Amino acid sequence: MSTAPQRPAIVVNPTKVDDGNVEAVEKAFAEHGLPAPRWYETTEDDPGQGQAQQALADGADLVLAQGGDGTVRVVAAVLAGG
Image (cartoon, rainbow, N blue to C red; front, side, top):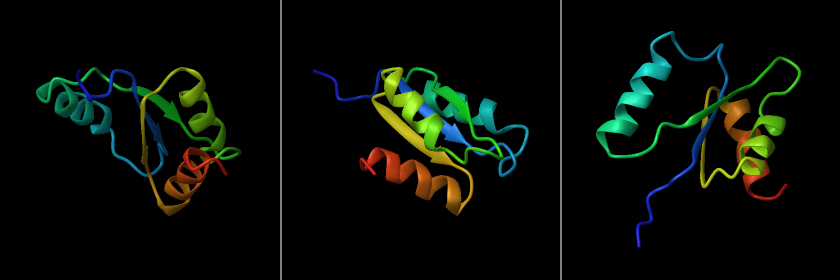
């Protein structure tokens, strides 16, 4: 039985990453035999709570946060049940 994620998701703050980010991350996932992640972009009004909740509702079995401290804290709180 494989423990590798089958439905990875990334909650990303688009103002904190450069233009090549998506391509580089998807290439790294592919190189390690992982499926391409589904992307959820934060907004000025929602720094990640709604996006993390949506990722879970969509069946994500791995959720990563990419951005600044605020994005990471908000996503971590959702994943911790807060």
